[in-house]
Length: 193
Image (cartoon, rainbow, N blue to C red; front, side):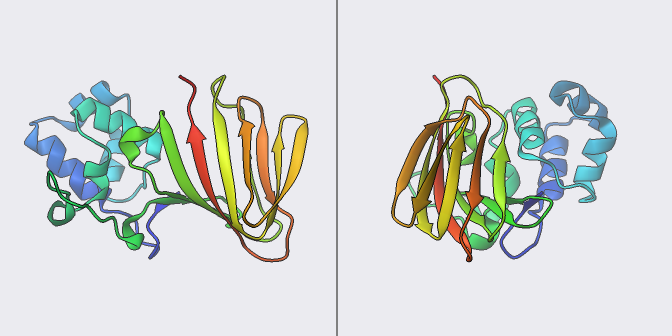
């Protein structure tokens, strides 16, 4: 689920509709370009459905724009040769269905698929379980607080605050909170070249 820190969804629907209309595209035309159903596009524009990053990526590619154009309001869009600030409340994040794991997207979305970084928070007893990524992909996990167990394939290592684990993720992998309090981490994903 994509959300902001203040539990509000970003105003993606309004931005999508504005950009689509400025390019004089019908829902049907954008649907064909992006490979996203017309009904899904309609639901996104009406803020009924909150799209995944994968759907946003396809829409941005089809419209020839950056994904951040959907996430940052017009008045807050960065100007050339300026310092842009993304407020904590505007930082998109994913929360797993159990509600024990939150992954905040810190890196610019246009780098997705190349180099990504996140803040990862896992409540006691929670875990982030992932399928294998592309061959050669690695993760660099720095534990800020708490205690976690990192598994990469058949290998597992315990990590304590201040330590960094570097491991392959072209196999099934998992980060589990084995402590009694919230574990807070920085996670960098280095995509295969």
